[in-house]
Image (tube, rainbow, N blue to C red):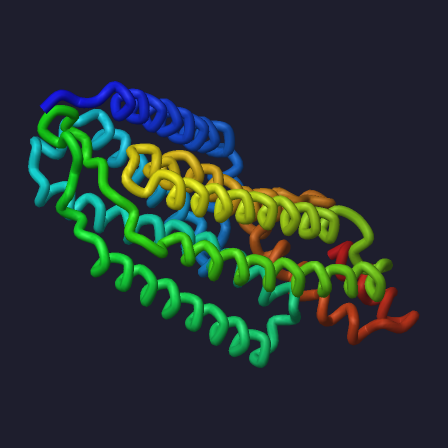
Length: 305
């Protein structure tokens, strides 16, 4: 069966964006590898460190695997293989995005005071979100057959279809990101007003800048994927939601950790830097409780230790 010209052009567009996204992702690894070794590998093991490494190297391995599949050397014309590949893509996208959300949740918990009540609230919201995510994914999967792969024998690439209503996943994502952004900015605004003598410089500024950057990228990612899935549900271009937008989102999530870990107002031993950053974030709540002339002196002494 001859492959239509329009379909071939869409494949070229898909391939070009895929190469661009993968190149940017690998180049980011090269540029930040020294920071990773200094601020991540030499820091003590925490959930934040584990989530960062899973996101960084899990995405690298999976995106490399996707690029190999895009070269047309894996399917061997097998629809069964493509079916498994598409299921892998669904799982990968969910895990990739959620590994970044875990980093954001941990930061939000620290900024909001590290209390048990906040932790329970965050976990409740997140579990509800995950259940909604899985429900919509399962519903979409049973509504559409993944066994239709156009021109598989001619092109050797798995071009699947996006199940109907899958764009609603992005609505839940957008709501979750918006809630966390608004609450985080509210807390940071409170800290900047009450604790202006405690952290008047780089730490607070970095948290505000990262919050804006991450929310902007997440919003762009959600809107872009929703548009792609709605306009190109059966077109090769629907794959851009994985090969182009996911690398950008992953880079932004990793930068959240590296930017904060690399924030040094004084000279710290490399192995202690992670502890110092965590201690400074948790000191926000302590700073409010110490909002008195004596408290300000104690807080300034914390910065100097």
